[in-house]
Length: 332
Ligand code: TXA
Ligand code: MG
Image 1 (cartoon, rainbow, N blue to C red):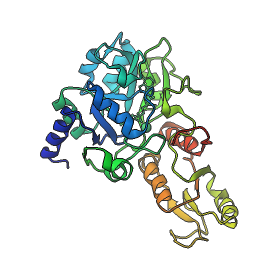
Image 2: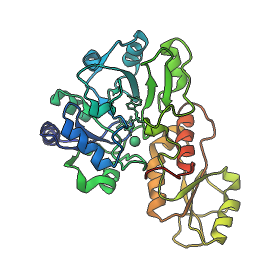
Image 3: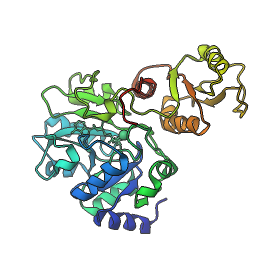
């Protein structure tokens, strides 16, 4: 439970142009007053993020939409009414209140109402939207607890609001509603089918990044330090054996594998971090598991994707594929 005094402290720091890490239902955000140029510039500096990559702007409710976006299609309003507060970001044409610093100069803005009571109160008390990317360094996995934020950015931000572990655990679904043909730019807990049902026609998932302006769509985003390999549980022992023969430290993130025991510090026994049974729990634990593998100094992480690539399982599989993608040319 976040104390009232902490909420007030967060609001004061944001008002003064400081940076506050905020819990949301998806992942922790690194928040700044979205109307304050210097504060937004600090977000980019602390994250090490290139300035052309736009930030998501978190608003206090769907009733704030018309102040921060323009030419809002009916279907976008329906999506907002159905899923906000919740893990859905809408890309819309921006209003003239949105500053260039937030959008990387683009004519569109990403808006979302987070489903976390403390953060919603902070936004509403501030009376301004909060621009917040995930509170990790650029290219690393997102934080799903206050401790993760501390590990990544602790010394460089003014305050962390500790709302406990994030309920969803992976970033919001992003739907581009700014053009004629809506598209899903990033998969999350709101599924393609749910979006299509409200929009009233298919809304495809964009397969190839249209531009490097959406870092969530960069091939090797969401990567831990170790290299990541996807494998079925039945292949794990064999693949792990090959790496161990090369003196690599292996961590397996998987459903139970016969013959592999409990986590061990022995160099020659791969460490098994068990995958929770449901896709919801897998999503909630995914980034913590990848961080745990790094903490155990894995050279290689072997991970089994969700069984069914539907709904949240598909979003988890998408994050895993990106974590496993080649990293050359990507800023870490
Ligand atoms: O769940 C989330 O969305 C979390 C929490 C903190 O709200 N935020 C998050 O932010 O994941 P970030 O900055 O790590 O990822 C934001 C994504 C990026 O891929 C960015 O390019 C895209 O949103 N985005 C933001 N504004 C955009 C715009 N105008 N056009 C296209 N993509 C945009
Ligand atoms: Mg991010």
